[in-house]
Amino acid sequence: MSKYLLDKFLYTIDRDPELVERYRQDPRGTVEWWEAERASLILNCQQAERSTWLTFTDTEREALATHDYVTLFELGSHTFLLLTLFIALFERDYDEPLAFQREFAARLGHWTLPYPDIST
Amino acid sequence: MAQVVAVIASTHHPFYYRASTSAGDDRPPFADEWVAKIGAFRDTLTRARPDVLVMVGSDHFHQLWLDNMPQFLIGKAPFYDANFYNEEREFGLPRMFVSGHEELSAYLLREGMDAGFDLAFSNELRIDHSITCPLITLRPQADLPIVPVYTNIFAPPLPQPKRFVELGKTIRRLVESWPSDQRVAIIGTGHLSLELGGPRQFGPHGPDPVFDRQAVEWIATGDLTSALAQVSLDSLWLPGNATHGFMDFMLMMGVAGENARADHVDTLDLFHTMEAYFTWYPRAAP
Image 1 (cartoon, chains in turn brown, yellow):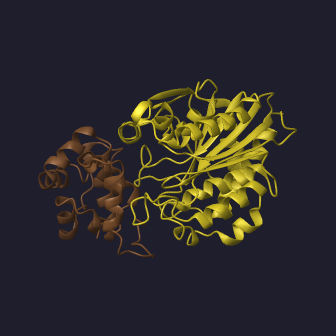
Image 2 (cartoon, helix red, strand yellow):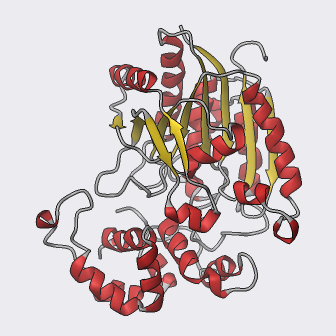
Image 3 (cartoon, helix red, strand yellow):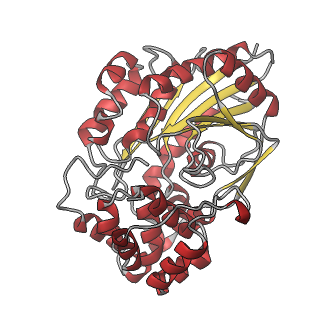
Protein backbone atom coordinates (compact mmCIF):
# COMPACT_ATOMS: atom_id res chain seq x y z
CA MET A 1 0.00 0.00 0.00
CA SER A 2 1.32 3.43 -0.89
CA LYS A 3 -0.57 6.14 0.93
CA TYR A 4 2.18 8.49 -0.10
CA LEU A 5 1.57 7.86 -3.79
CA LEU A 6 -2.20 8.21 -3.36
CA ASP A 7 -1.62 11.56 -1.70
CA LYS A 8 0.83 12.56 -4.40
CA PHE A 9 -1.81 11.89 -7.03
CA LEU A 10 -4.44 13.93 -5.18
CA TYR A 11 -1.94 16.74 -4.55
CA THR A 12 -0.59 17.05 -8.06
CA ILE A 13 -4.01 16.87 -9.68
CA ASP A 14 -5.61 19.31 -7.25
CA ARG A 15 -3.05 22.06 -7.88
CA ASP A 16 -3.41 22.00 -11.68
CA PRO A 17 -6.66 23.26 -13.23
CA GLU A 18 -6.15 21.33 -16.46
CA LEU A 19 -5.55 18.09 -14.61
CA VAL A 20 -8.62 18.62 -12.44
CA GLU A 21 -10.76 18.75 -15.58
CA ARG A 22 -8.95 15.85 -17.18
CA TYR A 23 -9.45 13.69 -14.09
CA ARG A 24 -13.13 14.63 -13.91
CA GLN A 25 -13.75 13.71 -17.53
CA ASP A 26 -11.49 10.66 -17.87
CA PRO A 27 -10.56 9.28 -14.48
CA ARG A 28 -9.20 5.93 -15.63
CA GLY A 29 -7.17 7.37 -18.47
CA THR A 30 -5.81 10.13 -16.24
CA VAL A 31 -4.74 7.67 -13.56
CA GLU A 32 -3.00 5.42 -16.12
CA TRP A 33 -1.21 8.40 -17.70
CA TRP A 34 -0.26 9.83 -14.32
CA GLU A 35 1.14 6.57 -12.99
CA ALA A 36 3.23 6.11 -16.15
CA GLU A 37 4.42 9.68 -16.58
CA ARG A 38 4.13 11.61 -13.34
CA ALA A 39 4.10 9.28 -10.34
CA SER A 40 7.87 8.99 -10.14
CA LEU A 41 8.78 12.63 -10.67
CA ILE A 42 10.30 14.08 -7.52
CA LEU A 43 8.73 17.50 -7.46
CA ASN A 44 11.93 19.42 -6.79
CA CYS A 45 14.20 17.29 -9.05
CA GLN A 46 14.85 16.98 -12.76
CA GLN A 47 13.13 14.33 -14.88
CA ALA A 48 16.37 12.32 -15.08
CA GLU A 49 16.44 11.96 -11.30
CA ARG A 50 13.00 10.44 -11.06
CA SER A 51 12.23 7.68 -8.58
CA THR A 52 12.27 4.07 -9.73
CA TRP A 53 10.00 2.28 -7.28
CA LEU A 54 6.59 3.96 -6.98
CA THR A 55 3.45 2.12 -8.14
CA PHE A 56 -0.17 1.88 -7.04
CA THR A 57 -1.67 -1.34 -5.79
CA ASP A 58 -4.57 -2.65 -7.87
CA THR A 59 -7.01 -1.52 -5.16
CA GLU A 60 -5.59 1.99 -5.09
CA ARG A 61 -5.55 2.32 -8.85
CA GLU A 62 -9.14 1.13 -9.15
CA ALA A 63 -10.35 3.48 -6.41
CA LEU A 64 -8.76 6.45 -8.17
CA ALA A 65 -10.02 5.30 -11.57
CA THR A 66 -13.61 5.14 -10.31
CA HIS A 67 -13.59 8.38 -8.24
CA ASP A 68 -14.32 6.16 -5.23
CA TYR A 69 -13.65 8.58 -2.40
CA VAL A 70 -15.08 6.24 0.24
CA THR A 71 -12.44 3.63 -0.58
CA LEU A 72 -9.75 6.31 -0.81
CA PHE A 73 -10.71 7.45 2.71
CA GLU A 74 -10.54 3.85 3.89
CA LEU A 75 -7.12 3.40 2.34
CA GLY A 76 -5.83 6.26 4.49
CA SER A 77 -5.41 8.97 1.89
CA HIS A 78 -5.05 12.44 3.42
CA THR A 79 -8.55 13.68 4.13
CA PHE A 80 -7.81 17.33 3.37
CA LEU A 81 -6.46 16.51 -0.07
CA LEU A 82 -9.30 14.09 -0.71
CA LEU A 83 -12.00 16.58 0.22
CA THR A 84 -10.44 19.51 -1.60
CA LEU A 85 -9.99 17.70 -4.89
CA PHE A 86 -13.40 16.03 -4.83
CA ILE A 87 -15.12 19.34 -4.12
CA ALA A 88 -13.40 20.67 -7.23
CA LEU A 89 -14.56 17.65 -9.22
CA PHE A 90 -18.18 17.37 -8.18
CA GLU A 91 -19.51 20.33 -6.21
CA ARG A 92 -20.62 21.91 -9.48
CA ASP A 93 -23.08 19.07 -10.11
CA TYR A 94 -25.21 19.93 -7.07
CA ASP A 95 -27.80 22.70 -6.91
CA GLU A 96 -27.65 23.44 -3.19
CA PRO A 97 -24.56 24.91 -1.49
CA LEU A 98 -22.63 22.28 0.47
CA ALA A 99 -24.83 19.47 -0.86
CA PHE A 100 -21.85 17.57 -2.20
CA GLN A 101 -19.90 18.04 1.03
CA ARG A 102 -22.85 16.70 3.03
CA GLU A 103 -23.27 13.72 0.73
CA PHE A 104 -19.56 13.03 1.12
CA ALA A 105 -20.02 13.00 4.90
CA ALA A 106 -23.12 10.80 4.70
CA ARG A 107 -21.37 8.22 2.55
CA LEU A 108 -18.74 7.94 5.29
CA GLY A 109 -21.43 7.84 7.97
CA HIS A 110 -20.69 4.24 8.91
CA TRP A 111 -17.26 5.31 10.19
CA THR A 112 -16.58 6.02 13.83
CA LEU A 113 -13.24 6.73 15.49
CA PRO A 114 -10.57 5.74 14.96
CA TYR A 115 -10.58 6.67 11.30
CA PRO A 116 -8.05 5.07 8.94
CA ASP A 117 -4.50 6.17 9.67
CA ILE A 118 -3.34 8.96 7.32
CA SER A 119 0.32 8.82 8.39
CA THR A 120 2.76 8.36 5.54
CA MET B 1 14.39 46.54 22.35
CA ALA B 2 11.36 45.79 20.22
CA GLN B 3 7.95 45.85 21.84
CA VAL B 4 5.25 43.23 21.47
CA VAL B 5 2.26 45.54 21.21
CA ALA B 6 -0.40 42.90 20.55
CA VAL B 7 -0.77 39.13 20.57
CA ILE B 8 -3.63 37.91 18.44
CA ALA B 9 -5.04 34.42 17.94
CA SER B 10 -7.90 33.49 15.69
CA THR B 11 -9.47 30.90 13.50
CA HIS B 12 -8.85 31.33 9.77
CA HIS B 13 -12.12 30.76 7.99
CA PRO B 14 -11.42 30.80 4.26
CA PHE B 15 -15.03 31.70 3.43
CA TYR B 16 -14.95 35.03 5.28
CA TYR B 17 -13.68 36.94 2.26
CA ARG B 18 -16.45 35.67 0.01
CA ALA B 19 -19.14 36.08 2.67
CA SER B 20 -18.09 39.61 3.54
CA THR B 21 -17.84 40.82 -0.06
CA SER B 22 -20.99 39.17 -1.40
CA ALA B 23 -24.22 41.05 -1.94
CA GLY B 24 -27.87 40.44 -2.67
CA ASP B 25 -29.02 36.84 -2.84
CA ASP B 26 -25.43 35.63 -2.62
CA ARG B 27 -24.90 37.21 0.80
CA PRO B 28 -25.36 34.61 3.55
CA PRO B 29 -27.66 35.54 6.44
CA PHE B 30 -24.82 35.46 8.97
CA ALA B 31 -22.56 37.80 6.97
CA ASP B 32 -23.51 41.08 8.65
CA GLU B 33 -22.94 39.75 12.16
CA TRP B 34 -19.65 38.21 11.04
CA VAL B 35 -18.45 41.46 9.47
CA ALA B 36 -19.33 43.39 12.63
CA LYS B 37 -17.35 40.99 14.79
CA ILE B 38 -14.38 41.16 12.46
CA GLY B 39 -14.57 44.95 12.51
CA ALA B 40 -14.26 45.00 16.29
CA PHE B 41 -11.46 42.44 16.12
CA ARG B 42 -9.60 44.48 13.49
CA ASP B 43 -9.76 47.53 15.74
CA THR B 44 -7.80 45.65 18.40
CA LEU B 45 -4.83 45.41 16.04
CA THR B 46 -5.21 48.89 14.57
CA ARG B 47 -5.14 50.47 18.03
CA ALA B 48 -1.85 48.74 18.83
CA ARG B 49 -0.16 50.60 15.92
CA PRO B 50 2.19 47.79 14.88
CA ASP B 51 5.13 48.25 12.50
CA VAL B 52 5.66 44.58 11.69
CA LEU B 53 3.59 41.41 11.94
CA VAL B 54 4.90 37.98 12.91
CA MET B 55 2.29 35.63 11.45
CA VAL B 56 1.94 32.00 12.51
CA GLY B 57 0.06 29.63 10.24
CA SER B 58 0.29 26.31 8.46
CA ASP B 59 0.74 25.49 4.80
CA HIS B 60 -2.15 23.33 3.57
CA PHE B 61 -0.16 21.17 1.12
CA HIS B 62 0.43 24.10 -1.18
CA GLN B 63 4.16 24.68 -1.34
CA LEU B 64 5.25 22.20 1.32
CA TRP B 65 4.94 18.56 0.44
CA LEU B 66 5.57 15.11 1.87
CA ASP B 67 8.90 14.67 0.07
CA ASN B 68 10.44 17.30 2.34
CA MET B 69 8.18 18.35 5.20
CA PRO B 70 9.44 20.79 7.83
CA GLN B 71 7.92 20.83 11.30
CA PHE B 72 8.57 24.52 11.98
CA LEU B 73 9.65 26.92 9.25
CA ILE B 74 10.28 30.66 9.11
CA GLY B 75 10.12 32.59 5.87
CA LYS B 76 13.01 34.93 5.16
CA ALA B 77 12.31 36.82 1.98
CA PRO B 78 11.82 40.45 0.97
CA PHE B 79 8.37 39.70 -0.45
CA TYR B 80 5.70 37.03 -0.34
CA ASP B 81 3.21 36.25 -3.03
CA ALA B 82 0.09 34.74 -1.60
CA ASN B 83 -2.78 32.36 -2.22
CA PHE B 84 -2.99 29.50 -4.66
CA TYR B 85 -5.17 28.46 -7.55
CA ASN B 86 -7.13 25.94 -5.50
CA GLU B 87 -7.85 28.59 -2.86
CA GLU B 88 -9.18 30.91 -5.54
CA ARG B 89 -11.23 28.03 -6.91
CA GLU B 90 -12.76 26.84 -3.67
CA PHE B 91 -12.88 29.96 -1.51
CA GLY B 92 -12.75 32.85 -3.98
CA LEU B 93 -9.62 34.23 -2.31
CA PRO B 94 -7.71 36.93 -4.17
CA ARG B 95 -4.05 36.81 -5.11
CA MET B 96 -2.07 38.96 -2.68
CA PHE B 97 1.42 40.37 -2.31
CA VAL B 98 3.04 41.44 0.95
CA SER B 99 6.45 42.65 2.04
CA GLY B 100 8.69 40.64 4.29
CA HIS B 101 10.81 41.79 7.20
CA GLU B 102 14.08 39.99 6.52
CA GLU B 103 15.95 41.42 9.48
CA LEU B 104 13.45 40.06 11.99
CA SER B 105 13.25 36.76 10.08
CA ALA B 106 17.02 36.39 10.28
CA TYR B 107 17.00 37.25 13.97
CA LEU B 108 14.29 34.72 14.80
CA LEU B 109 16.04 32.01 12.77
CA ARG B 110 19.45 32.52 14.36
CA GLU B 111 18.25 33.05 17.88
CA GLY B 112 15.56 30.40 17.59
CA MET B 113 18.11 27.76 16.60
CA ASP B 114 20.37 28.83 19.43
CA ALA B 115 17.39 28.50 21.77
CA GLY B 116 16.80 24.86 20.81
CA PHE B 117 14.52 24.94 17.76
CA ASP B 118 16.18 23.63 14.59
CA LEU B 119 14.03 25.79 12.35
CA ALA B 120 13.68 25.28 8.63
CA PHE B 121 13.69 28.38 6.46
CA SER B 122 12.48 29.45 3.06
CA ASN B 123 13.79 32.26 0.86
CA GLU B 124 10.92 31.92 -1.61
CA LEU B 125 7.67 31.20 0.13
CA ARG B 126 4.20 31.58 -1.28
CA ILE B 127 1.91 31.95 1.68
CA ASP B 128 -1.56 30.47 1.86
CA HIS B 129 -4.87 31.23 3.53
CA SER B 130 -3.65 30.44 7.04
CA ILE B 131 -1.80 33.76 6.81
CA THR B 132 -3.83 35.65 4.24
CA CYS B 133 -7.13 35.11 6.08
CA PRO B 134 -5.89 37.01 9.15
CA LEU B 135 -4.46 39.66 6.84
CA ILE B 136 -7.88 40.02 5.24
CA THR B 137 -9.64 40.20 8.58
CA LEU B 138 -7.11 42.21 10.59
CA ARG B 139 -5.10 44.28 8.11
CA PRO B 140 -6.77 44.15 4.72
CA GLN B 141 -4.54 46.86 3.29
CA ALA B 142 -1.65 44.41 3.87
CA ASP B 143 0.74 47.33 4.20
CA LEU B 144 3.01 46.03 6.96
CA PRO B 145 6.03 43.74 6.52
CA ILE B 146 5.53 40.24 7.83
CA VAL B 147 7.54 37.32 9.14
CA PRO B 148 5.69 34.09 8.30
CA VAL B 149 6.08 31.18 10.70
CA TYR B 150 4.74 27.85 9.49
CA THR B 151 3.95 24.87 11.70
CA ASN B 152 3.10 21.34 10.72
CA ILE B 153 -0.37 20.58 12.08
CA PHE B 154 -1.25 18.60 9.01
CA ALA B 155 1.10 15.77 8.02
CA PRO B 156 1.87 13.21 10.73
CA PRO B 157 4.21 12.72 12.51
CA LEU B 158 3.57 16.08 14.17
CA PRO B 159 5.47 17.82 16.97
CA GLN B 160 3.94 17.44 20.43
CA PRO B 161 1.59 20.15 21.74
CA LYS B 162 4.15 21.20 24.34
CA ARG B 163 6.59 22.04 21.54
CA PHE B 164 4.06 24.44 20.03
CA VAL B 165 3.71 26.12 23.41
CA GLU B 166 7.48 26.25 23.87
CA LEU B 167 7.94 27.73 20.41
CA GLY B 168 5.34 30.38 21.23
CA LYS B 169 7.12 31.30 24.45
CA THR B 170 10.42 31.41 22.56
CA ILE B 171 9.06 33.67 19.82
CA ARG B 172 7.73 36.08 22.43
CA ARG B 173 11.04 36.16 24.27
CA LEU B 174 13.05 36.59 21.09
CA VAL B 175 10.93 39.41 19.71
CA GLU B 176 11.29 41.22 23.03
CA SER B 177 15.07 40.79 22.85
CA TRP B 178 15.32 42.00 19.25
CA PRO B 179 17.48 45.13 19.24
CA SER B 180 15.05 47.36 17.40
CA ASP B 181 12.57 50.08 18.15
CA GLN B 182 9.87 48.39 16.08
CA ARG B 183 6.39 47.68 17.41
CA VAL B 184 5.59 44.04 16.74
CA ALA B 185 2.25 42.26 16.68
CA ILE B 186 2.36 38.47 16.84
CA ILE B 187 -0.64 36.93 15.11
CA GLY B 188 -1.44 33.23 14.77
CA THR B 189 -4.33 31.25 13.41
CA GLY B 190 -5.54 27.74 13.99
CA HIS B 191 -8.75 25.82 14.49
CA LEU B 192 -11.12 24.77 17.18
CA SER B 193 -12.85 21.44 16.52
CA LEU B 194 -12.85 20.77 12.82
CA GLU B 195 -13.60 17.85 10.52
CA LEU B 196 -12.46 17.81 6.90
CA GLY B 197 -12.97 14.85 4.60
CA GLY B 198 -14.75 12.78 7.26
CA PRO B 199 -18.28 11.82 8.32
CA ARG B 200 -18.70 14.75 10.74
CA GLN B 201 -17.87 17.53 8.28
CA PHE B 202 -20.13 20.46 7.35
CA GLY B 203 -22.68 19.99 10.11
CA PRO B 204 -24.79 22.81 11.55
CA HIS B 205 -22.02 23.56 14.09
CA GLY B 206 -18.45 22.56 14.66
CA PRO B 207 -18.12 18.81 15.17
CA ASP B 208 -17.54 19.14 18.94
CA PRO B 209 -19.17 22.18 20.58
CA VAL B 210 -18.17 20.91 24.05
CA PHE B 211 -14.50 20.94 23.05
CA ASP B 212 -14.95 24.36 21.48
CA ARG B 213 -16.35 25.87 24.68
CA GLN B 214 -13.56 24.34 26.72
CA ALA B 215 -10.91 25.49 24.25
CA VAL B 216 -12.22 29.07 24.23
CA GLU B 217 -12.08 29.10 28.03
CA TRP B 218 -8.49 27.82 28.03
CA ILE B 219 -7.39 30.45 25.51
CA ALA B 220 -9.29 33.35 27.05
CA THR B 221 -7.80 32.68 30.49
CA GLY B 222 -4.36 31.56 29.32
CA ASP B 223 -4.88 28.22 31.05
CA LEU B 224 -1.90 26.43 29.58
CA THR B 225 -1.76 24.00 32.48
CA SER B 226 -5.20 22.56 31.72
CA ALA B 227 -4.73 22.67 27.97
CA LEU B 228 -1.43 20.80 28.13
CA ALA B 229 -2.85 18.30 30.61
CA GLN B 230 -5.88 17.49 28.48
CA VAL B 231 -4.58 17.81 24.91
CA SER B 232 -2.40 15.23 23.21
CA LEU B 233 -1.70 14.24 19.63
CA ASP B 234 -4.07 11.30 20.14
CA SER B 235 -6.82 13.26 21.90
CA LEU B 236 -7.04 15.85 19.12
CA TRP B 237 -8.51 13.28 16.74
CA LEU B 238 -11.61 13.06 18.96
CA PRO B 239 -13.15 16.54 18.42
CA GLY B 240 -12.64 16.27 14.64
CA ASN B 241 -10.04 14.91 12.27
CA ALA B 242 -8.55 18.35 11.48
CA THR B 243 -8.44 19.59 15.08
CA HIS B 244 -4.65 19.42 15.31
CA GLY B 245 -4.78 23.00 14.09
CA PHE B 246 -5.68 23.78 17.70
CA MET B 247 -1.96 23.44 18.42
CA ASP B 248 -1.43 26.78 16.69
CA PHE B 249 -3.80 28.28 19.28
CA MET B 250 -1.65 26.62 21.94
CA LEU B 251 1.42 28.20 20.35
CA MET B 252 -0.27 31.58 20.64
CA MET B 253 -1.15 30.86 24.28
CA GLY B 254 2.58 30.37 24.74
CA VAL B 255 3.20 33.75 23.11
CA ALA B 256 0.58 35.41 25.34
CA GLY B 257 1.95 33.75 28.46
CA GLU B 258 0.79 31.46 31.27
CA ASN B 259 -2.51 32.66 32.77
CA ALA B 260 -2.61 35.71 30.52
CA ARG B 261 -6.23 36.78 30.22
CA ALA B 262 -7.18 37.98 26.78
CA ASP B 263 -8.30 41.59 26.50
CA HIS B 264 -10.67 40.82 23.63
CA VAL B 265 -12.60 37.56 23.31
CA ASP B 266 -15.29 36.89 20.77
CA THR B 267 -16.80 33.85 19.07
CA LEU B 268 -19.26 33.14 16.30
CA ASP B 269 -21.02 29.83 15.96
CA LEU B 270 -21.16 29.03 12.26
CA PHE B 271 -22.08 25.96 10.29
CA HIS B 272 -19.13 23.54 10.14
CA THR B 273 -16.97 25.39 12.69
CA MET B 274 -16.87 27.90 15.49
CA GLU B 275 -15.01 31.13 14.87
CA ALA B 276 -12.96 32.52 17.75
CA TYR B 277 -11.03 35.76 18.14
CA PHE B 278 -8.60 36.75 20.91
CA THR B 279 -6.34 39.74 21.51
CA TRP B 280 -3.91 40.28 24.35
CA TYR B 281 -2.11 43.54 25.07
CA PRO B 282 1.14 42.68 26.89
CA ARG B 283 1.34 46.27 28.07
CA ALA B 284 -1.52 48.56 28.95
CA ALA B 285 -4.36 48.35 26.45
CA PRO B 286 -4.02 51.16 23.89
